[in-house]
Length: 292
Image (cartoon, rainbow, N blue to C red; front, side, top):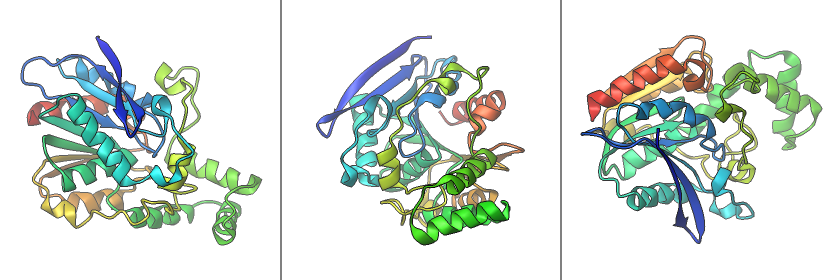
């Protein structure tokens, strides 16, 4: 499979991108938007097989992480920055029509693009994502109630004091994330999951907050729930039963989007595409073919 990499100038810095495959026939490219903010594209290389039937699969490291790493600019980490970066990349690559697949925060970016720009989008895949930061925060706090009293107390104390560090707090967060997000990489995992990555910790902190359940950054008031009702773009919603993106969050999107399909993966956490890779690839591949 042909892999093309390059850089796009952006805000005086550089945004790195990667293209797997080549376009054949009438198959439209798909742009994959990674999570975080600041989590890098790495694990989304698991979706390279979407290119095997003649479709360009485009990933990129959003400014602030990975091969587009940048820090020391806390005021830069806003929806506007990342939205304009996506718009610039679409123009840079000369894309007229395309699909968008957004994972977690990348899904928020997808939702904002479809709602506020919309140009060129054939379909949207909303993977383990959210329409509202405050709804997300409430659902994570509901999940916290199923943790041990010790872990609950550690998280409550951190939120009360504003001090998000310490052994008890870090242990509680680790338990929470392994239950709902992912496990530490194993030697048997694909290389793109095991690969060392340069996470954008500043982008995450100032964009989102200190942890998954405390949206306190520039995205804290993100809420596109009402705008979803105006969509004319078909949407495939994907989530797991044990996901940070809870069934309530996904039902909220499913109920709002006029032309939506929702697939709930039993037993999966936040990285459905990694935990049920073959099933996920088959689902998305069939969806894209139906909406080219």
